[in-house]
Image (tube, rainbow, N blue to C red; front, side, top):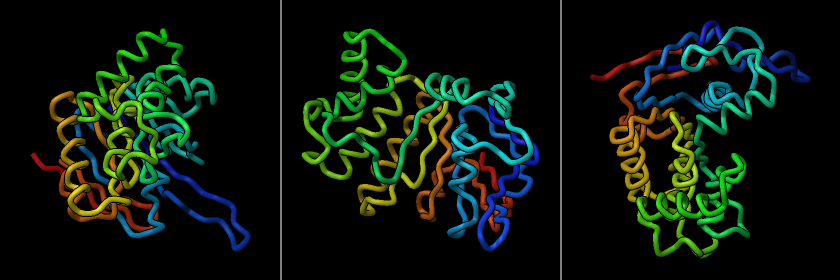
Amino acid sequence: MIKTQNLSKTYNHKDGIVHALKNITLSIEKGSFVTITGASGSGKTTLLLMLAGLIRPTSGSFSFLEKDLTHLTDSELAFFRRKNVGFIMQSFALIPYLTAIENVMMPLALNKVNKTKQIAAATEVLENIGLGKRINHLPKELSAGQQQRVAIARALVNNPSIIFADEPTGNLDPALSVEILNYLKDINVKKNITVIMVTHSPVAAEYGNVKIHLSNGQVDSTVKKN
């Protein structure tokens, strides 16, 4: 589903060039649950954002379903993301003045879906994730776990083929973390949606059937489970 070849990213810094990623070559199959681990500064989030088309590589290439994304324009990459990708962030990234259903409707609005269909789709996905009675609540009126479930609903509403999650349990206590991880695993298995998740948690990392460990911007190890 995703292939990279010698993917690298460097940044210019006042103290010299920073090599965030060095020659990353990967192949990720559809339906995988991939966890990316590594020490702080190892390149985890840079890799995640690059695979999602949010950061451009300095060199190398990457493709999605055999379509080369390396040289697409910004608008072409934005179109790719709207049609194929869902995001879940550590900070939930909900718009504070919008209700749960309005937050979930946002990706559909960006795709210019009919308003009636937006409401129906957002309501359905919120009900499926156990928030049917909270659709008109603002983020501040929801618990941390509920806010993250709204974020998951927003990621799912466009029926993406892949979900990118950056430390999705980083702001949650252990019990809520397990709840959110179980949601993601359920989505992965039942809907065959590929999940690529950055995490520092050994418990969260065990949810992956493909575990990638980075060290100093390079793949240190890759473990695949049947």
